[in-house]
Length: 558
Image (cartoon, rainbow, N blue to C red; front, top):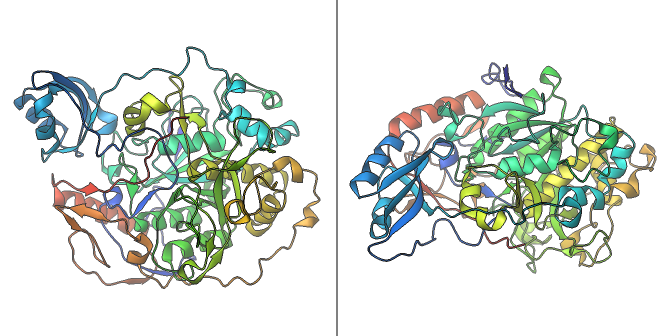
């Protein structure tokens, strides 16, 4: 079905029985309200949105953004007015509204049962009246130049015909993602799937940023022969690739491991539907799992996708260097591609590049495993598409905003997106390659930079280095000394320390949102079942407030 320039597929097949996925999982409720899985690489602003204070004198008014629980917007507005506030603008994309309230009443607004969050409504200004992509080291123009993507463009390889699944917070049809056929929507597995005005849309701002890096293309860029050297139009790594968006996170940017597994399941089932040709899967998310990758159900789901011919690219994590490693799950799985972030130091040469201080390092014995980061890619102060009115935009726009259409972010999320786009270029050039062969090509052609091996792995992405290598160089490559996973671990182990918190009580163990122990499902997780359970949960919970612990939203002042 065509919705503007965005296609929607797969809804008729949501209840279809998945094929090829075997793991032990617990079907949990509430979609993105369950915080067991968090954004792995997005730094946008300078304050934690949950802890920011709004200072003013007792008699002054404060301008705020009030986010209500889904369906409770009207009730929240009534309560704000009761406290002496005034609603100034409706913001349906974030379930909320702008308002002015007495400064002394801000904390009372925050405590309302119908309110999810209250943040300061700051004035946002672009960093420059005019924007020059070639003078911004973090622009996609310079990123595609440094990584060698433009060299492939010159030869006609722009990602055309390759589908890239982006399991994230959805996307919005801003310029760069509005070209006909650019975005295909899979199922919305987030809690917002029940709101018709929010379904598929990115209310958080992360997924749109990733999609832009991976395969964005400005509507004005119409001639592939002119992509290389274009300093005016926004172009992602693989500007003619197709984005297949599977939304799992809501406006808080949080979701549960069970939903991500269901999303991977859908991608595996529908990879060849309607000419989607999904060859790459981008996961810019991660958890600090407490179990080894060999038994982790999330890591196992990624392995299944890999074995079905899908190159799985995941963020290494933003925990910085640690002596025994700091990789997040599922980057700990040795089969898939784990990407760290490089810092280009503001130059167009790799000679001075280092690994960004926040980038997670390789594991040396953590959870009984040895696992190197596979490679690094630019991830510091990367400029991509802005999602106006989203949580990230409203909360971090004062430091992250570049222009009205562009936003700056840092992290291994951005680096993973760069590599996902790179994989699409490689697959268009060499369509017979399987995931193991793509990984070998990307890692062996990487360039060593100023960093330890445990930080950079095989080096920094360099597509130009391998552009002329014969396919026979990597054909038939099979990783050695790697034992496949079995997924027999627990969902709680996949969550690690990240849990839903309600009324001070954390969701732990193999329990659903009602704290009722359910029987483990051995075998298939049905996406359709998850959707039905989400609907039941929403009706049961009504207006109850669910609060997730927000992680990894730290400063990007670049």
